[in-house]
Length: 262
Image (cartoon, rainbow, N blue to C red; front, top):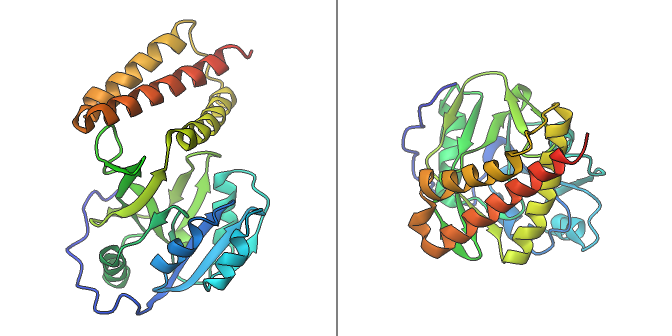
């Protein structure tokens, strides 16, 4: 893997100009609140594809109105959805963006620069995570690199949740971050973390991992230390403390769930 970052990108002369040979892909399920702004932020792509999991809030129609090409597929897992979306991409390059993310003009310029000049098969993109409306840089939330930009023929996905991109070729790192409106309030945070925890516990079971009797108690402590101390969650003050405690709690839930099933 190539750990070098890209050279500074050339200025974007016209944010509305198309970047040739690239498709932006957005996976959706009930994202009416976000989809319009997300599509607008990638309007410079050759094509925008939305793969919708039969939303019930009008997401698909809003996406069509915003100019995206919309396909539908029943949700199985995140890796499967991304692979289905890849089957609809006809361009050399693909950029995956979540509905609650936004691509800035600076990031668009950098993307255009590297796909025109660099040999890498894919690129990691950092994220600025806004959690409860606050930019969160500690506790592992920054740089939060995401593998999102690929040569279409070089990538496939594996693992059901927090999917892993399997890339044929070298990867690089971009400078400019995605803007990620991650969790708007604690209720949304807990809903999503409960879902991720259930997926994570199932993956551990499938991999044959059987925790020791003490693991549900020691792992949350380790996780809290890792988030709050090692990853500098303390730099975000009480906000960082709260997030570190929340995530330690869900580590407890995950390992407790695995421990009680044979």
